[in-house]
Each structure stands twice: as C-alpha cells, then as structure tokens.
Length: 98
Image (cartoon, rainbow, N blue to C red; front, side, top):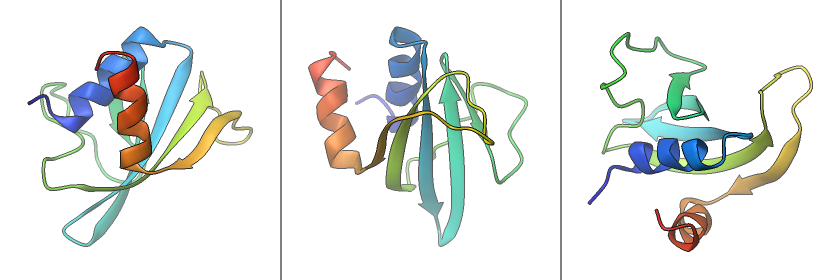
C-alpha cells in the first residue's frame, strides 16, 4: 500500500497546476502541508531537508484537503475545491489511478 503523502505528491505531479493544502493532526498537534509538483512542505512546522522524510506520517489524521490553482499565494488563494475529507479525495485519487 502506497503512503498517503506519496499518493498526494504523485497527484500533484500528474496535475502540476494544482496545489493541495492538507490540514492534518499528528498526536494532537495540528499542521498544514502544501503539496505542489510532487513536493511537500509544512506551513506550520519545520520541514526536513531530506525529501525522503514523509511530511504526512502514517499516524496522521487528515482533517481536510483544499485544492487550489498553483502557484499558491497565501494572500490571494484561488480555490478549486475546499474542505474535502480524506474519503472524498481518495475517490478522486482512485478515479485518476492513484
């Protein structure tokens, strides 16, 4: 089974004009991850220098996923879809073969 973060990164490789903002919680701590063109970066916590270190750990609870037009501008975000649950986004991933 492919890790959630890798599936989301691969989605943004296939759809390079989209940015995913993924709101997660890990052991009670919130985080928001931006994923663009196959790369993940935390907007709230330090991001590891090693791209092999997953930004979305296996024990993370995905709270919601927003789809935006890239590149991401926090002052003027252009939403495609907002507040998707993991179940809803997983349907999208399955539809595109991920």
